[in-house]
Length: 622
Image 1: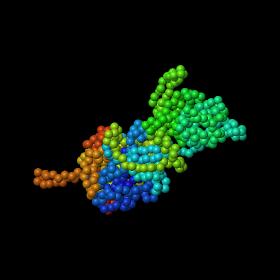
Image 2: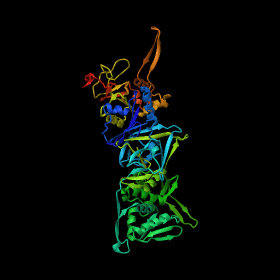
Image 3: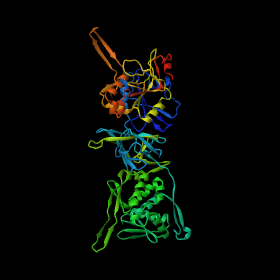
Image 4: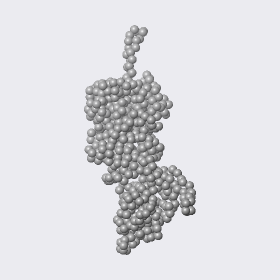
């Protein structure tokens, strides 16, 4: 057996087991002779044309190679590898995924929602996968400067590695310290018009338009939290120990407005910019009082990094650390609603969680302090960490790079309430943003089966639809006359009421050209005994039925041998595998397996004769 992973460059997808996000395919070629799979492919029809540059055929799992095994053993090695070697691509349920509305835990994502992909665009979720991940199962924790994310070891991330020339999908377990995880982001330029003359010492020093960078954006956020417009100035009020914020505002005053700020320090530190027209402009943008403050409309149109810097400025001023996230209180309902909207547009999770009703208090000196009510909100820890990562990221073209600091092995805890892991299938791009980074079937070919050139493309369409768990191509027996391997029932010859191009439902399929949803194999894997094949532990998912019995009439012993294909299909139906794997509709079907007769394969023997050899297929041409 040689297994291959195929990457299809012209669609931007990765073929794969249809149980995961998304569209990867593991191709298993069980070998019963001493031929190598590469030789078979080259001699018998060039299944994967060697001049097709978009396709990268990678032979892997060399340590398995069951050359000379029985067919059932070879299939068991392939099926075991499918379950154990690289098809568990999932995240913990708390991992936040960026949607069109907001960032939300992956466990709360529904089919039909839109998520941001590695191309920086929104695409619809077509399937949500959830499965139990048993205690002490392996996980990988990837740590960046501010964030960490846990996932199964095989989950691929869009990354730049030390050895790679460009971006590639890299398994979590293969990431190394110094590799760069990426986030899609267009680098548009923002500008702001203060419509303010006389900002300098003379009128010729007037300023109108300024480019907006993260420093100026943060300045605006600090004003939203700690600023106010007086008669002829704007003023910021900070705690005396908040030197970083004081310095930041002072530097903007000097660099942008060409003025030295007035700084007064008493119970708090006041930083004033004495420009009358600027005060009018800020009142118009932000409102006049605490309970009427709003976020200016132009902030929502800024690029991602400037929006994030604005959000950070506001949280620097009004936020407080709470369980790793940032909680804040605002007297303005419009401000809180706008802030929640801005966070959502920036891929962050922000929630409103409380309201403080109006009240008043009488001080000892008789002075009355009135509270007009306040609203409470919170940016989650994962979103706040993501914000810090993206603001600290390095730009490279249309991506922001966040460098991996460490990759450590972890294990699923024993006492978790939610032992499940989750994954998504996403249309077209087959990727989504998990945290602040981009995260991204088993197919049997018998060695004596020649596939038509469009087989992989047709199976790719099937994987995208993900509507049938087991699908087979059509081929005929290696015999003269040759018969189509299409059966309904047992012991009643082949089924002949079909024509080429039809989709035929049957109760058994051959496994020479068969696409099997990995969820089917996972259930079978869990319910199959373990045995050893040439030193390798595998599960007995396939078995060649054989028995010896004594016939009392003839006083003789007889051997009865069947095929592993038929036994496999019988087991799937009899043991309720469809239902257990999440396909209950197919469990109720009399004929639950599909044969696509447009995928017409040829059978070839050791002498190179291809079957059907005498035109037996002509009977079924429309």
